[in-house]
Length: 173
Image (cartoon, rainbow, N blue to C red; front, side):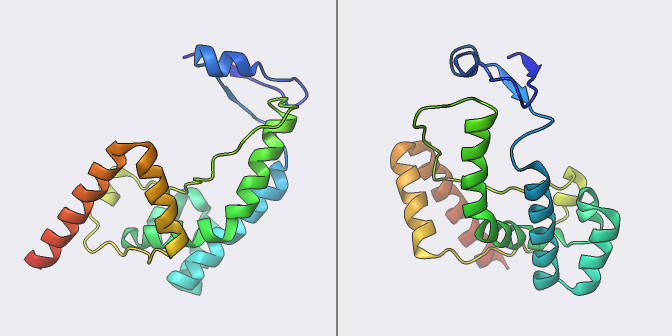
């Protein structure tokens, strides 16, 4: 794959992305300041709700890049779920705007319904996690995962493996 920088005012060569595997890093893109502010606020709100106001203040002072120093790794999946629920519609719209303004997609185009939020901690911090707390999945989320599995059977094997590991862990503890 090759990498290019695509300024916001230039239409991106979408054919190169689709056929040649090129990708672009956008330094300036649609709704940049608005989305950045919204994402940081939602993360901090989630940290406060899931952990504490003190933790929120520490992360706000240090920055999101230092979240692993203050927010427990065991609660990361809860935070991912919180952020996704709060930002899902904004992320769909933002994706549309980037497609329109940066990629130059003028005709109708589709945005995948499966939007993911992943928070990655440094490996040595993440592997110390003891009892990772899982968010409850609402029925529509389970339905979306089921549809995704029908499109890609490898996801089913991954899900069954994860369920098996979880039940073994519960029996052993």
